[in-house]
Length: 95
Image (spheres, rainbow, N blue to C red):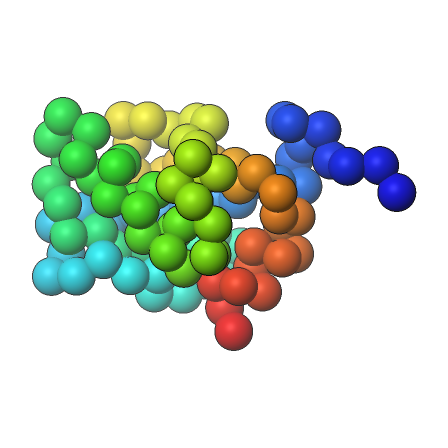
């Protein structure tokens, strides 16, 4: 079996981020989009850094394995996780 390429769509996930929450957490899945709340303001990349930290904790991977590939400045983002397929990502986020 061949490993997935670095930019494989199978490693990608649509995420909607809600900044300024009371705590950072993955709250669910709605219409194929993972809902995440982060306890950081959307200022100077703080919410993006908190999103990466929250997802890496929830997925059990290092922060360097999680990358924002689209949507740096918006609430809707596309995330790529190195080393996991989309199915593995969803299974770990929604037990």
